[in-house]
Length: 306
Image 1 (cartoon, rainbow, N blue to C red):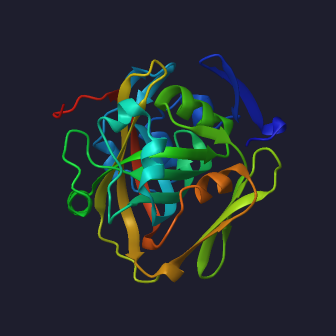
Image 2 (tube, rainbow, N blue to C red):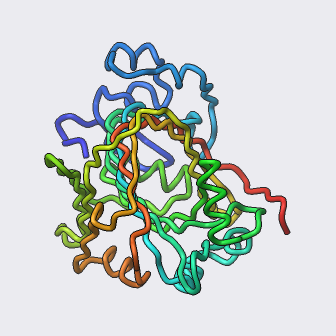
Image 3 (tube, rainbow, N blue to C red):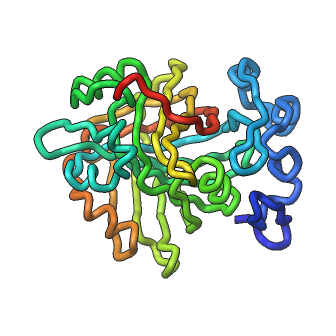
């Protein structure tokens, strides 16, 4: 969060939001010229963004789509979880279109991802996502077969359960504009020689509630590839919508070794929520120390299926 001395208040859909004074969002409201990015961070490769066109959109406030994330990193761990519990957490209208993928009897999948957006249209912030892995809307839910299909096409679908962030700008934009379950809390990133860790604070007590540690794997690939992550949810009028982000992965690798990631739960509300999912085996860990992303404004969900 910007401190009082270096922040200014702006109005977003009736919310008075502190933003970094003179930062990208203060100056350009999600539409900075790429020439400005090039001048301020000359080491960033902007070639991909040069091929993407922004459009003015109304998402509860005036913005531009897609939102650009120029320099970012993330770690992700995918765990098995109780299938009945996952189904119960998805609203009925959404569940009618997408369902948790069953990887074996009684078990689905959740992804736990910690993001650091070092430089983006919304300045910089940390975010943690807990999502159910689902089938693609309109496609049959074939469990492992569907998962393999999404993996091969690099086109993943999910339902976002929790999405804490550490700036009010990210919270308001996410809740109002993208219908996402965001709340504001401390998310502290720590980096060691062989690992990166995130401590998520309980917003009520201010104490560390969840700690997530991932190893810095060494067998990194520099093969550039695009990955699409889409989410289905309800808008503020209970209409089915979907949003998606396309990520350009610049440095990345993965592992199935359970020792690659550690999730430590505490006594706060997020830990209690995660415990209720009855997490089991970690089936995949992804270490992505460098990626870029474009987040598109939500649209009405139209499927081929019933």
